[in-house]
Length: 252
Image 1 (tube, rainbow, N blue to C red):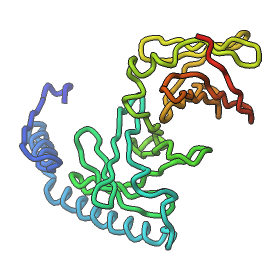
Image 2: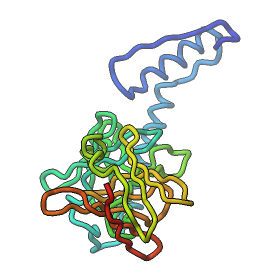
Image 3: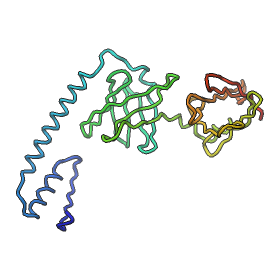
Image 4: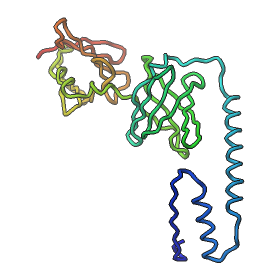
C-alpha cells in the first residue's frame, strides 16, 4: 500500500497456500485501523465454492464427451516435441500405454477424451484442461493446441522434427545444384538451415519433416524430398508443389 507507506512481505514454504493472502489482508487491516474482516472464513468459503465449481466442471465435461471415439492415430504417433516461439517446448512421451507431457519440468499425464482431444492433468494445482492434436493434409500429427493462457485463445505448438535433421553434418549432404525442367535449383546451407532458390522465385527456407523430406517455409503443401542411390549419395530431389511432383537431378 505505497500511498500509506506500508509494505508486507510474507514467505511460506508451501506452494499455493492461502495463508499468504490471509495474513497480508489481516496485517493491512490492522495498520490502517480498518474494519476487522474474517479473512480466513471468507477465503475458506471461496475455496469451497472453487471446489464445487471444479465438481460441476467435471460433470459438464462428462456430458460433453462424445462416447465410443478413438484417437485417429496409435498413441505412439503423438509422441514428440511440440514447440512455440514464446512458450517453449512441450515434450510428449508414450510410456506404458499412455501419453505423458513434460513442460517446464512439470509432468502432465494425458488421458484420451474424444477424437484427438486429450485431458491434460496438472496434479500440482489440481487442474485438468483439454488439449487438441491437429493432423496435417498428409495425415501426420502436426500441432498441439493448448489453452496455456486463460485470457487468450489456444496457443499452437508445432511439432518439431527430429534433432538429427537440424545438424549441419546431416544437412550438408543436400547442398548443391539441381536441374528441374531446364532451370537450376540451388540448395544452400546457412548455419543449420537449408535454403532453396529458383530463377525468378523468392528464396525459401526448408523446414525438416522426416527422413530426407523438407517443407518450404511459407509455401503451404510444398516440399522437397531428397533421394539417394544405392551407395547412399544424394542424386536427385522430388519437388512437390501445386499438385505436381517434379524430379530435380543433381548437377554437382
